[in-house]
Length: 154
Image (cartoon, rainbow, N blue to C red; front, side, top):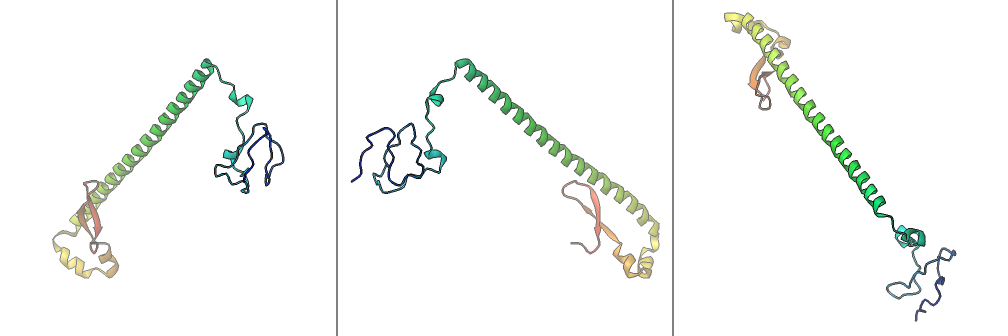
């Protein structure tokens, strides 16, 4: 049978640390005295000392609370700024893409007008590389702008 704790700084058989703690540690909850007491984890270390038990003053508690709330508020503002930057960047990118598509469409429609009425004859005279350059128009779902895609694209 297991021996009860009799003295405040009693060492058990199998203790890894030979330093006697100032606060007694009780028996295992299971009562099995042959099990080693875990002394490597932070949860098993003795933290309740007279120094830690001293309570802080109300003013100090309120001061810490204010500091913590100010820190949380600052973190929140920084996160919001980053989120706004990402949104603005995405909007700029979409605007740039839309403008690029519009410019491409304008320049291509001018070159299409140059083909004129004999477009079919000119296309028959084109070589393979020139035929690959031919584009068709399609509406972009995201931007709503007309864009050029390859004639063979799906």
